[in-house]
Image (cartoon, rainbow, N blue to C red):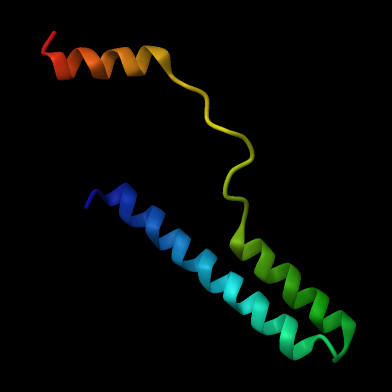
Amino acid sequence: MPVKRFWLFDKNVSRIEATENIQTLDLIVASREKDIYKDMHESLERQIGVVALEAPKLDSKGLAGLKNIIQGR
């Protein structure tokens, strides 16, 4: 497995764990003090992060280069 893919998977594991922690937090702390709940929830949302802001754009030159490599040109 390439190193970049490994670290991508590692980040996703942290995101999944943070999502599960938010769900648990919502169930346990919802009836308790609002300030503590808000701080914990925001912290876990930062840990999840933003997965994608917009769809990636097609790199036509890069795609053509890959096709040339595959075809042996």
